[in-house]
View 1 (cartoon, rainbow, N blue to C red):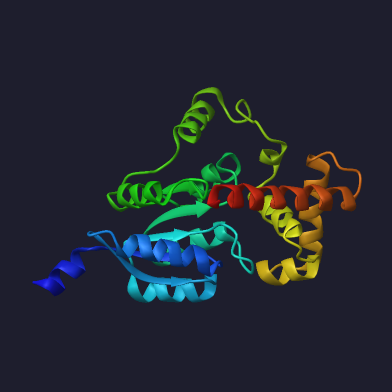
View 2: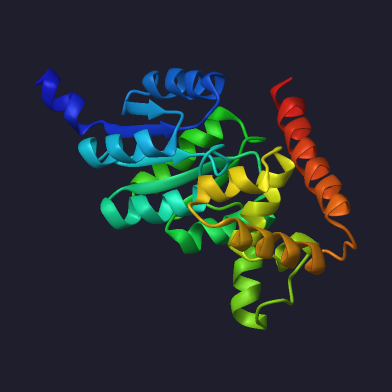
Length: 230
């Protein structure tokens, strides 16, 4: 009876490069009577392997995984384990990433500025086959469908493609062009092309100006996360 009850619990797998985040989510999940931690990982490669092996019900993952592209990981998980539901739990602005994550195959997006109780609610809804988005993002997506793309744009960064935004973010996180190329399994010239396009779309005259913008954006996200934690 007890083993069957354990099997009936929602199995949740957490992917985040920060041990503290994984520990907080682990504690919250394990304290829920209908959930159980099915594993956790700090890296995309290990996470994908474990998710393939254990096929949890829900994967909670961060977009920024250091060595990998979180959007690409979502696509890989959906390709290899299509029955798994994915909830993105990220420090990055939902205006920029929520719709991209849903298009990649995620079932929900919640920011790290939300409470852990809200994260648990999001996991519950996603595990039931529903889509979890804030009202703000849901309204924006509906507006795009009704009015057409571009009419609800609020940030210059929304002009960037997924790859351009990933390269922009990684530049802000301190990675070199060579490191980004290695992480994304692309050649250096391709990364430089994405960087140039991002520079032009954001209206910067130099790579240095793009770098400053990227660093400021990443640092602002870190400050917002720290303010919420405090």
